[in-house]
Length: 100
Image (cartoon, rainbow, N blue to C red; front, side, top):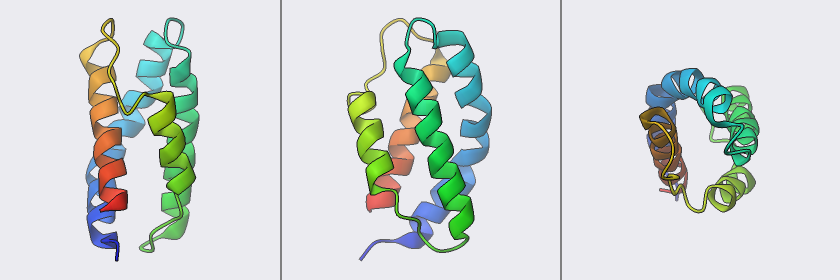
């Protein structure tokens, strides 16, 4: 059985920061890392589904599968800033909490 409260706690803690960082990282690094445009789109889907679900756990298996493929399992490129790295680390944490 999945732990809905763990996912809800993680999203409550990390979504505000991710909502700030993701657009900035996309603007700064999207030119040299076009895959980040997909990361932002998928992140937005995750936020929308999570918010629509309220306290229930949304179905996000496809979104996290896509994120892991696009990001090579959240591997941080060598030529990016700390904010980019922080986004991947936070997304990985949300992913892990979802499947916990």
